[in-house]
Image 1: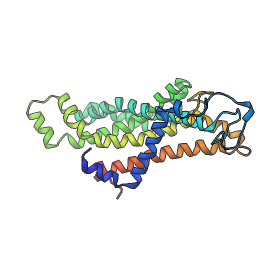
Image 2 (image 1 turned 135 degrees about the vertical axis):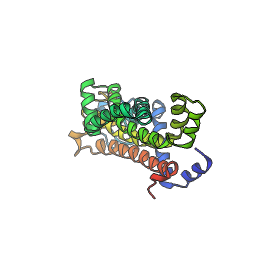
Image 3 (image 1 turned 90 degrees about the vertical axis):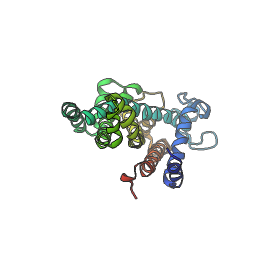
Length: 278
């Protein structure tokens, strides 16, 4: 990213705010053992449903576990799924999108039919179905969410490849004897990076919501491990006597997804002016 683009991004207050909040979540995920004041899985029956206070800043749950500690470790699970699911989607979707856009005909037809079939199912419905087939665990939830994001990556990559393959620099590379691999990975893919970065920042919040939903349904993180979705599921029976059990994990999900969405909007405005919102 050039200096001019970095300066433009710094002047985008919403994107800058989103980037700072996203960085806080990433830092909390990386440093969870150092930040969390208590063991997130250790019950304390002497402080069951304790209100937020000096001992427990965000209160405790029905087993006396510290809410702040569980949110910090829940953020780690969310970031893990968010990043790894997007990486999986890119590893599969980018080569397929490149092949479909560059070769056309049979390759494009086969990849497009696969993409259309997967897009026939809403993202979360497909993720829930795959997670139910694979079995409940954080790893399987990551795989299910990553597979569900592949169609979007394929479409973005294919569209960028179709736009770029007739560019002068691609024709020059072919004229100089460059093979398909050279053209695709040294000329087309680097010039499609901006759109893919934006897609990645959009995919992470979708994956965070997907992980929370799967864990809420019992298809993701399994108790007693901490997850924002698991915390919301446990809070259902205690909304009246202990509303903080639902409020704080819910706010964490909203803050994380909003942060990455704001960052993605800012990156789109800076990296892809054709799709800018203003």
